[in-house]
Length: 161
Image (cartoon, rainbow, N blue to C red; front, side):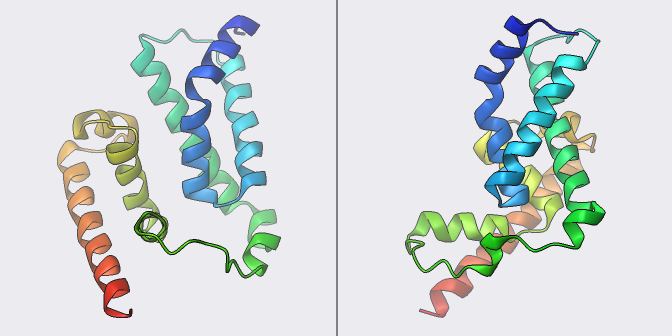
């Protein structure tokens, strides 16, 4: 079990990353906070030492993604609807940033992960391949396909205006 000092250091260092990954997957603040707690509880209870800071960060990212997937496939989650999805969000500003974010969030999960890690966390394809346990060429293919889907989505948005 890790010390309180180690846990606090990890939370300070990785809190934003964990929350962003959760929001990309879950699109819900409450679920994000639940997963945030779960990830750092697993961190505190994880008995093995990390080889480096990069290994630690990759482990946190992998645990976060897996926890989000587990929540999304849970029986409870599949039988409920959040209040956020019931509300109409007319207050969302119509900016390029929100359009891009909406387009990224609408991508299938396998593309969302690589796009997030590549563009937001600035990992290289080789690093992403290690984190997601995929071949480097697969990561490049997923990035290329994601860019193509984003281009189509964003061009479709501008055509509709």
